Length: 437
Picture 1 (cartoon, rainbow, N blue to C red):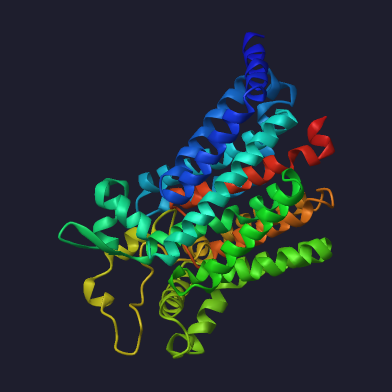
Picture 2 (tube, rainbow, N blue to C red):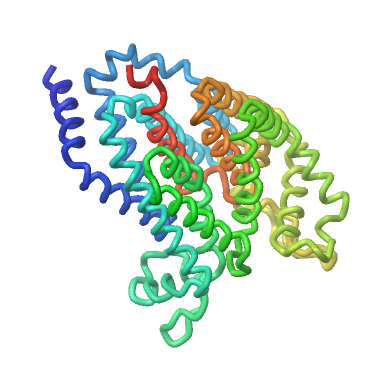
């Protein structure tokens, strides 16, 4: 009873400090843009802490037994990730990666259950802080794009330890950072893309009058800069924003059509990614002069990974084995042929989560992952008509970002995907009648 009383007191306290909540939310979002490899982990850690507080409170017990979480559609995929550690190249490292992912996902599930217990004024304060933070982050990204990472280069000159990959991704002369690689702006635009739909929803539900249209204009303007400016250096972000903008329009006009299209697209990506990867290479797309360099490299990497998938298609090579197997290859096998733009290898990860799932977890992993995604879409279909389009669009954004970018086991990437989804769920909570019961 004492724990339950403390939990209720905490909720009341949050409601009485709207300005503080708004400020903290804003700062958390801005730091995700500025330090994308660190801040999402911190925010996810805070969410995990909140999940523990909720579980030990009386509120969680009122919702039912904690064993109900074992029936979630996420469990089969997570369970198979642990099983696949048994034949991984490094079973212990695979277990650590699996444990982090499981903790991240399960804590997010608990937080999602807890969000409806917050009062509407608290959610509004969080929404306003998130929107302010997103707009500041969008301005930061646009400035960085136009000035070619000017702000980041200046900060890293004085605090180089903020970026552990500076020696690899930067050019330094006489103590002055002359240039940083596209890896920096690529991560920041990934954060932007994953928070894009929640930002539009926050503006739609929680901004009023002229402020709402000003937010829309700022989001549109920053998206245009990212898509059109040549220094963006993230073709994935450019492609995702273009495609998902169309998805948003279709979702608003015909949500059921968009829902079915999203499900078909997701299933196609999961189950046809291997033959598509092989077909792109066989068609010689990696040799086309009008295909940009990073796309040529992706096609070569994807083809090589797809060929390795065919060697162990059912069970895969084991959780988090890609990096170890790639490092174990003889150096003479990694020499770049004259007729290829890049070396045929998987690298530490193949820059495609769908292919990585097939390679490491096999057909079983692909089936459980597909079941997870389609079950999420089924839940989206039950949302009210006013907010369903934004959930569909966010699902499409995640689906697009997973295809050509980062690896399955990069913790910051996992965290920002989960955090962005939790933000969307929190923003929608007051709009779902059953969640306020």
